[in-house]
Image 1 (tube, rainbow, N blue to C red):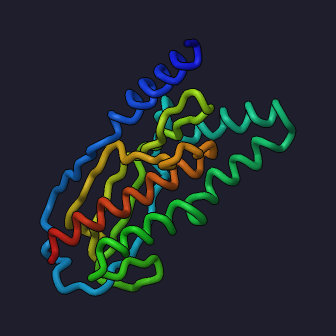
Image 2: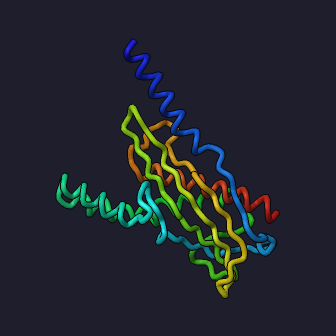
Image 3: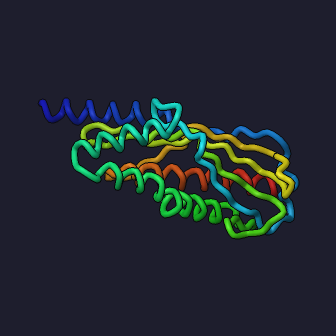
Length: 199
C-alpha cells in the first residue's frame, strides 16, 4: 500500500512539474522576410545577462554553488564552475545547432559564417531543475533570438519562454544533460518556426 501511494505521489508530482513547461509559444517582433533566399547566417550566443533559478544575476548562483561544493569537497566547486561554462560550447550549442539545422534545412547557421545577417541566441533565464529519483523538476530556459545586419541594426526578434529540458526516460540526474535537452528543443522549435516563415 505504501509503495502504491509513493508511486502515485511521484506520478502526480512529475505531472505537475512537467505541465507548466509544455506548449511554449514563439513571440515575434519585426519581419523575417529578409531571410528569404538567404543561404547562410552567422550564429552567435549570449549568456551575460542570464538569471538562474531564484537568482536574477546568474553569477551569484555560480558563486554560491561553487562555495557550497568546495566546502563539501575541496576543488569540487571549482570543477563544477568550469563545467557550468564549458557545457555551453561543448554540449548546449552543438545540440541547439544540430536540431536547428535539421528543422531549417534551407539556411546554414554557423558561428564561422561571414554572412550579411547574424542570429544571436540570448539565454535570459535558466532553471537547472533537479532529479533525485523520487522527485524531479525539469530544467527549462527562456531565450530571445536577435536577428541583426552587418551594421548591428536589429531586424527582428523571437522570444520563447519555458523551453523544457528532460530525458524521456527520466535518467537525467546530471544538470548539464537536462539543460542540453532544453537547447535541443530550442533548436527544433526555432528551426520549425523559421521554415514556416521563410519558405
